[in-house]
Amino acid sequence: MKTEKNILIAFLLNISFSILEFIGGVFSNSVAIMSDAIHDLGDATSIGVSYFLERKSKKGPDEKYTYGYIRYSVMGSLITTVILLVGSLIVIFNSIKRIINPVEVNYNGMLIFAIFGVIINFGAAYFTREGDSLNQKSVNLHMLEDVLGWVVVLIGAIIMKFTDISLIDPIMSICVSSYILINTFKNFQEIVELFLEKTPKGISISELEEHITEIKGVIGVHHIHVWSIDGYSNFATMHIITNEDSGKIKKKVKEELKEHGIGHSTIEIEKENEHCKDEECHVEVAAEVGGHHHHH
Image 1 (cartoon, rainbow, N blue to C red):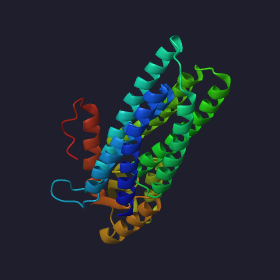
Image 2: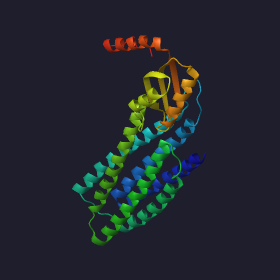
Image 3: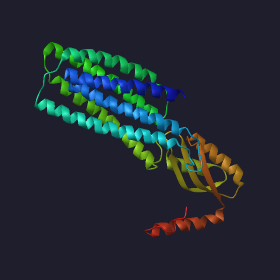
Image 4: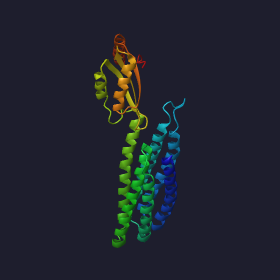
């Protein structure tokens, strides 16, 4: 519940601030402030999206979503990321135009806005610093970026006030935007890997196989699949070959999996003589290009 309230506060702060900012950017004719405004607007919408999806993601499993709604939170992260990617690109484009044709900038207006920006964004970052979903992390990352962006603008405004080099404005803008772009892209990669069911970070399938095979009574293990729903909770399925009591073996295997950070597992037990059939099935699948026989 705490996460949700914080996200809502941050959302309201950000949306009202980005509107103010945009006016400020127009008033002081600063593309760096405008770039921050676009960025903040992106954040605000993303936080809004996060808010609704984060709430939905708290719903437990039901008939429609047997794993629960956790992925909705990741979806929020994805929408945010796309908004930021597009926003940053627009800003970079406009800054480059300004470098080619420089314009007058109102330094004092910029200074006042930058001071406000640092204070307000620091407040928002402080509010959202707790929480550990991927979504919450990405929201907090934006907040810190906002503070950073404003510190840069503040320093730039001071330098421009004393030197009158208005080129600093678009250059700052490009720096801030590029930084956002790089980070957003990393975030995007993580999300895509999650959706592609990539084996979670920190889990080695070969190591798992080794450890499970070492358990007394386990003859072999195959069809290991490990995936994550949200980047935090990991799920696994596998087939274990054993002639021992399946209950005991299952318990041992599940304990081993917990040590590897896998909280939920589905284990199929096979007797040793059943085992050949499965190996054959393996060969068949490999031999057949389409792999129609793969009925797992």
